[in-house]
Length: 319
Image 1 (cartoon, one colour):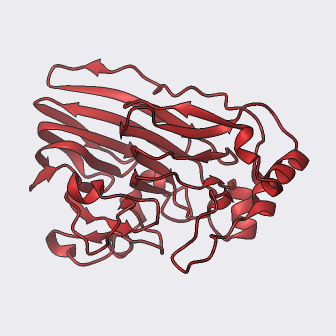
Image 2 (image 1 turned 180 degrees about the vertical axis):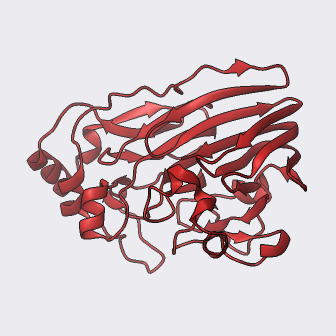
């Protein structure tokens, strides 16, 4: 079984047009900042586009098919575990932080948010914020927010296509303008905004900051991880596979299909496949569907062997 998912689109003020012009997303929105490619979150659910479940939300389908759809790893979580986005930052995002599970569940009734960013493309000189230049105290954090010198202590990093940033909960971060990326994260929409460049929201008022909550959850230290994917690209002849990151929440690969890639959706986990570039087709069991840049597919656990054929780049995620 293959479920093709319609992305949930978001028009945040910092977004651009690339998800419409380059990825072919159809929308009446003037700005498409994010496409939620795998989502059972109440703030933006995927709709199934094909087969017997066409028109149903992904959550409804999983409920009908049973939790076995998620696999043994997926069933360890009390709700759907991950959320995958494509993000087009025409302008800088706010400087922000996400809480861990303990804080988020206690205060927000949500998961915390650990995430990773895979840089799909970027303009020359593009940079993002990743932690601090040096360790600072909570008191200095508050003071720098108040006196508008917060950006003096953040760690800015030049980015390149193919970089991978692992953003653990509690890590200060911000995507900079001119960056297009895929974000794989915990299934959460809890964000504490620290600094927003004095911008006004759609209502004409400054967007809300969450200083005290941010102070409570931020690790005010420099990052310890590099921007390198965990694995090197391995050429298998008809495809190249690279491990981007692996943790207890998700495992993500970049698959460059030159001809054909075959793998198995086993009993451990469902499989998410997001086509980041190129085109071809996907086959699983009796189902064969065309696959092109911007498409998102969900394979239930135990769906068996699947193949990708064509010339395309695909982000494969399992839990």
